[in-house]
Image (cartoon, rainbow, N blue to C red; front, side, top):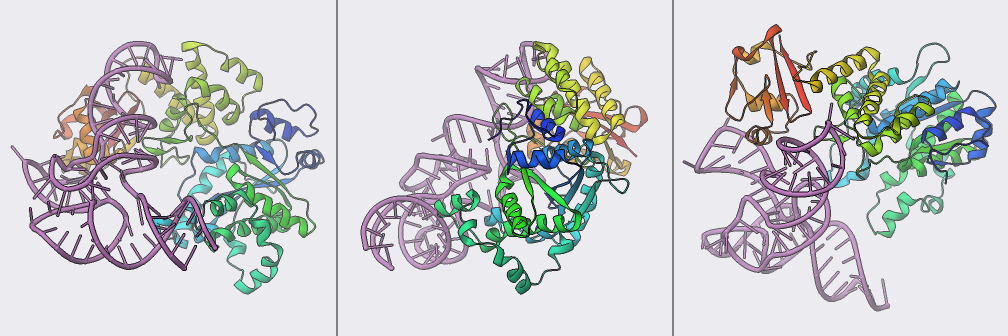
Length: 421
RNA sequence: GGAGGAGUGCCCGAGUGGCUAAAGGGGACGGACUGUAAAUCCGUUGGCUAUGCCUACGUUGGUUCGAAUCCAACCUCCUCCA
């Protein structure tokens, strides 16, 4: 296995050297072969994402950053949104028997996700990044045809050797045919992309390893030399899976999480994670990353601000990042207020009479009235900078400050400026 | 195929008829302390139009004034034997 973050002086390709240096490489099907391929000229690489939600989240950022680096170094990224595979539904939570998504919903999700992807990779021009939906080809297959063309290329014997399958079987857990076949679909994706766009590299999370390897092998049987690369599974210094907060996932789409909220997430990084995150999620030179990581004590806070601003710039753009930085400073330097509205609500709602609890829930700071009530009774909620501990408090037009706004905070870190219009 | 054991809240796990919205721990959130960090300490941790009501201990029925707890069937997992 390759050690992430170690300098890779023996490598011929700049791209691989950078990815290794950044800590974006976990496993590779054949590192030397990939190095050769990358050093011989521009190639096309792809990373696939589920279209089950309307936004990607920070967990998707590592493969996306990998795509971004590859593009920066002259290669062409393809982002595949799994319109076809999402239709089948992720089978791993089978107990819920949740309804499989409808095509219309998936199409809406894809449109929404596209906007985030456009920021991370450059999709302009004939050599720009591509965004494709695997439903394009997966929907076209007919069952018998699929079995004959691809089913014949896979042996159950081989598929059983994959950890994802083996661990299930060893634990005597049920593994449905659907799940079992999922890796075939992903393998076919890789082959199709190879045929259609000369794609030669697939990048994914480490849980995708088996699926990726299957694609590489399917390609080989078709006379194609394909490569697979996985990014590490990212955990925080606290050992938990990264990217979840009280409010849920840290979304990339501004409608799901405001750029300021996004900035705050990075600003609150634990000391121990700062260096790792700067390396993985920013494009600062490694020397600068090292300098920043070595800051001690309270000085590290500056590094955290730089981290937050850099990542926010990549995901939301420089204006949003600067504005978030300013807001953070204003808010935490003193008794400052939020500068820009973070939420908008119709004025009519206020006229109808709006309960404080209702407002806290509407802003996403609590999942239910009960939770909001506990926060209020615990003295965590401030309205216009005054603690309100009366859960029955109602908000009226009299609470509005300048510009029809009011500020509301929950705890020290979650703040909103609500504009009524 | 046979025998036995298990399924509890976000996770782990106690509970074998009323005192159980369910011990304890983890996580998460809030408070204190700090540097918007960590560690530590304290509090909270099903929902609601709320001194009440509803939902919840694998599923569906049953016994009982009363069930997570007893019974039956089913589903799933584990262990041992074949």
